[in-house]
Length: 93
Picture: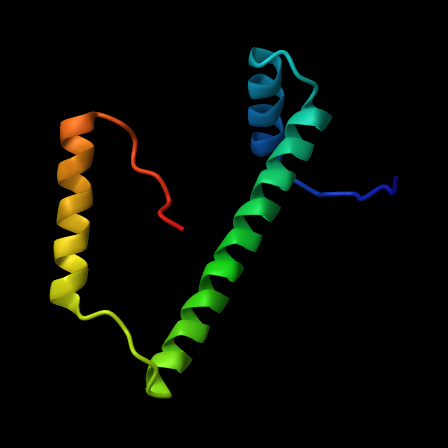
């Protein structure tokens, strides 16, 4: 495992120490979890952007898409079914 030095302001260092103690963690572990969470978030965001660009390129190339009125009906039906069942919405893929 390698070592990285981060220079952080005293106020942030104090916040991290206080939060880590409240969560019964070390400041080191708190920062590792925060960095991993931020990396996961960035990867998800980039993946979403790539998918959006690919879909846009496909639409621009003439591939068929879904008309807004069809999507609106689909979404309303899903929300209605969710409201009736009380079950959380799931990814339909």
